[in-house]
Image (cartoon, rainbow, N blue to C red; front, side, top):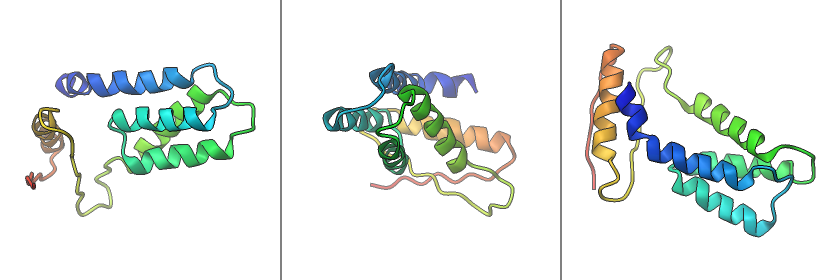
Length: 128
C-alpha cells in the first residue's frame, strides 16, 4: 500500500498546488477558473470530476465560502462516489491514460496487486 502512495506523490502534490491556487479566495474570476481547471486536469483528476467541481463552483460563485475547503470536499466526495466497491458489482473497468513515462504500467501493476490482495479477479489489457 505504501508503494501506491509513493507512486501518487506527484498527483497529490499537483492537487495540493491546485488547492493552494484557490486558498483564501472568496471567488474566482473567469480567467482564474480557466487556470484552476487546467491545474485540476494536470493533477490527473478525471475530466468528469473536474467538470462536476467547476459546475458546482459556478453555483456558489456569489456566496461566501472557503473555496479550498469546498473544492477539497468536492474532490473527496467525487472520488468516494466513483471508487470501487465490490459489493453489488459484477465487474469494473478502469481506464488509465497518460503520456509516455508517466508511470501508467507501474500504477496498473500496483492497483492490480491491491485488488488481487482483496480477493478480486483482475485482468489488465493494453491498448494503443
